[in-house]
Amino acid sequence: MPARAAFHPGEARGRRAAASPEAVSTREDFDTRASASIYVRAAGLMPGGVSSPVRAMRSIGRSHPIFVERGSGFELIDVDGHRYVDWVCSWGPLILGHAHPSVVEAVQDAAAKGTSFGAPTEAEVELASEISQRVPSVEMVRLVNSGTEAAMSAVRLARAATGRDKVVKFAGAYHGHVDGLLAAAGSGLATQGIPASPGVTASAAEDTIVVPWNDPAALGTALEAEPVAAVLCEPIPANMGVVPAARGFLELLRELVDANG
Image (cartoon, rainbow, N blue to C red; front, side):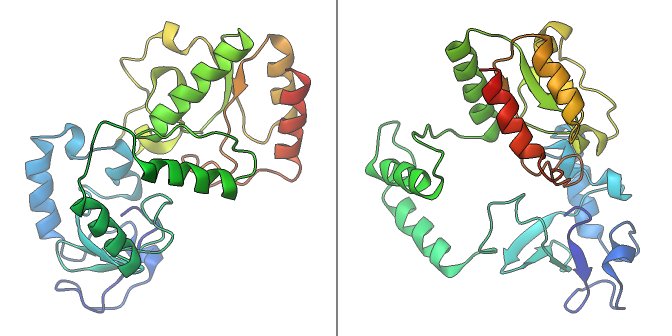
């Protein structure tokens, strides 16, 4: 995993000497030959050898990524046998850690009944109800397959409801792989050494207004300049480096969007 996964060598087959997470996060002096071998094969089958640029690990000084074999609790185990403390947790959803017995049992029970039906199920109604109960501002739920689809649906709904085209996003924030929201989308492209996103046309991004994060004046100016359908916001943006909102910024954002309809 990226730099947030700290190496500890207790059960590794390669490097045995203890090392600090800071030292290991950007160096390759422990044995990762199995990962290197898989990467050679992957590079001929997948662009960059990975399924997402953020997994390339070049931004942390690696010539090839670490390939994970399995996870257990708070640890990841790579194909060379090294163990890592997993601070990433699949970028958020694994709040119970890897292979939690209750989660494994629930997945096995569900899979035994069938994996995909292309028709409504009671389970998705129960999930929607659970989400609405836990998040007071969520009145109704549309379940989709990815964050990209969720962002696309939200923007489309906002444009339909307001009759406006422009949306505001913050520099460095990532809202999925849709063309119009890839403008200034943070570290994902940078980790593979790509300075921009070739293939995204100017017309696709022209309705996206980008403002600096934690900048009340810039936000106010953007909202006053022309009618806006929506402001897309991560309360704690991750792609720019996990930068919390300044005190009062989210409350100001709420006030400004309400004032601008």
